[in-house]
Image (tube, rainbow, N blue to C red; front, top):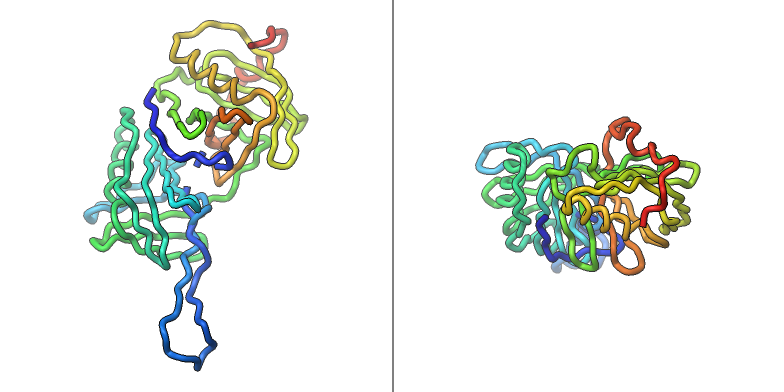
Length: 289
């Protein structure tokens, strides 16, 4: 498991927002001809889905679930399904200036790795932002581009959330990509105020009361299997985040849940029907500590 220090907001797991479009003039039409102040393109605080990246004339389609966000504090975060990419990002008018991007170093599937390398090449230096409806295009001086679409926020209830990030204060840790599929951590909230899923080794179910931006978790019940230490480490982190009151946010297809002590998880919405029955088979199980 590779850990990287990065700014993680309690209200984020995260990624782009530019601020209000157009130009502002100190006087109306026919006023003085002095310089006008150009407002920032509204991209910060918005969850953007990355559609494609074109570098050196070669277009690379981004894997499903790829996303980019720039938070109001000037930090950009991107993900293509494997590593976390982050960079400083300053928005000024229609220009975004990225600092040198950094990335975690997990081995990835070939198409994901290709998209990540293209994004790292594109997110370096000054880019021009062009917003058209819910579509955003970032273009570098050399012609490299990144095409994005604004994500519609997924529903908390009824969505299968695949946990891909473990949070501890300002530290974000990627969930290992090589966990067995049947043990991959995930959770689903029900309309009846329950939550069920898998914490990385064991399946669990419990109560989860949602009020505003807060979820209050009762201690979950679950199976009590023992798994390899890497899976148990993930499980302990997931269960720590699902204990007592926690703050949650949804940006596009990303859910972030953070408890009062700073422990948390980041999760991505996954297609309906991919959970199977495993997450529900916890009847009669003992309490999981």
